[in-house]
Amino acid sequence: MIQLSRFRDFVDTVLFGGELRCASCGRIADRSGMCSQCKERIAYVLPPVCSLCGTPLRLLGPKTRGEPASNPENQVCSGCAMTRHYFERARAVAVYNGAARDHIHELKYRARTELVAPLARMMAEVAIGDGMAGECQCVVPVPLHPEKAARRGFNQAQLLAEDVGRLLGIPLEVKALQRQRSAGSQTFLDRRDRRANVIQAFLCPFPALVSQRNVLLVDDVLTSGATADGCSRALLMAGAAKVYVLTFGVSVADERDWFKAPGSSLA
Image (tube, rainbow, N blue to C red):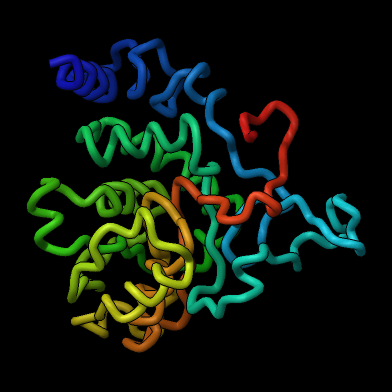
């Protein structure tokens, strides 16, 4: 009942101009739909970042001596140094820990769909700031397997993609990707096993939807990049020109890559 009440308050505010309440905690919020206290708890991704997956970097080694490099846009994290990605680059709002993880878990596992609007707004801002928003002609959500979608009742990636596409003015192509087999839970799989598990799990049943178009692929979290690569591979095989990835959270697979920004909650 509390969740329903918060959702009604949010809708009433948006439609009828009432006092906007935070979609996460219920406090007074700003135009984004989230209050300043909840925003301050998020560990935002700050430069330097991996030029491929967008992981925040703390550049190590004899050449950098632990200091950010003078040309950080060309740096890659330890995972991407060993992986061939099918997407051009990925960018995220926050490191997937603490408050960012809590928000995603509330959305996915407690059906707190009122969180979609503020999360999508932050994602759209990242896409604009990075420049990928201006390069893409369609938005495609990462699909769930039909059985999982039926159990959950919604696909959080699709909800985020709908709002991101609307905010950016880019058309949504929900049918562009299909999950042809379930990869099961990947929570306890390492990077190599995740990639092998999903790289051929997706197909593009309607190639005309993406042919010769730059695609903005939207998901909630980028972990190893395996799911994004599986989707990107299917889209490119269907004729897409390029694929860019946008998520709310990004996992730091190797703590040696972490760049601790002043005031962040990174450990």
